Each structure stands twice: as structure tokens, then as C-alpha cells.
Amino acid sequence: MPCPCSMTGVRSLVSAKLGACPRCVAMAAGGSVAGWTLTRALRRGGAPRLVYGPVRLAAITCSLLLAAHVVAYRVRRRPPAFGAPL
Ligand SMILES: [Zn+2]
Image (cartoon, rainbow, N blue to C red; front, side, top):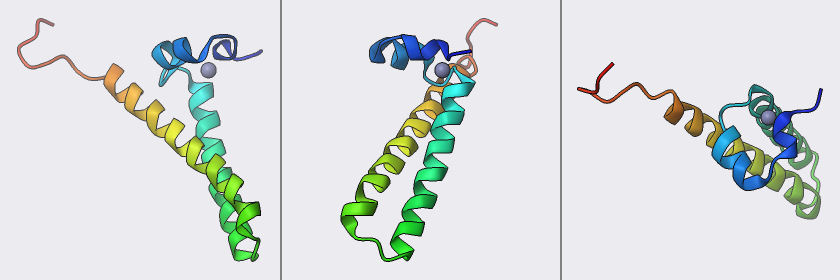
């Protein structure tokens, strides 16, 4: 079953789905872990920057996406302000 977010545009994805779709959050987390693990392995293996650079860029992108998911989730789940009607 395809992710419902994959069919929407980037703008609506950011506004509506960020932090709301567990599958997208999991993909961002998995990409982040895999990207940083591969970057670390390539650098330890003595790979040139031309090789590990794009991998690191992908890892940074996944990490930023994951951070955006977490922030959006936290903002959505924020409790009502003090004094607000329940
Ligand atoms: Zn999704």
C-alpha cells in the first residue's frame, strides 16, 4: 500500500503531512541513520570527499527532514495555552 503522502505536492506535504505520517517519519529516521552510518564507514575507509560528500549531503537532508517532522509533531501536540477553555 503506497504512502498517501507520496501523491501530494511538496507544499501540501509540508503543511499537512509533516509530523503526521508515521511512515514518512520512519523513512526520514531510517535514511538519517543509514546515511550517517555510510558516511562514517566511507570516511574511515579513506574514501575521497567526492565519494562521501554526496552521501553526507543525503544524511544531512534526512536529518533535517526528521527534525522538521519532530518539530511539526510537537507543535501539533502542544497542550492548550494557560487559561484557554478546555
Ligand atoms: Zn507519509
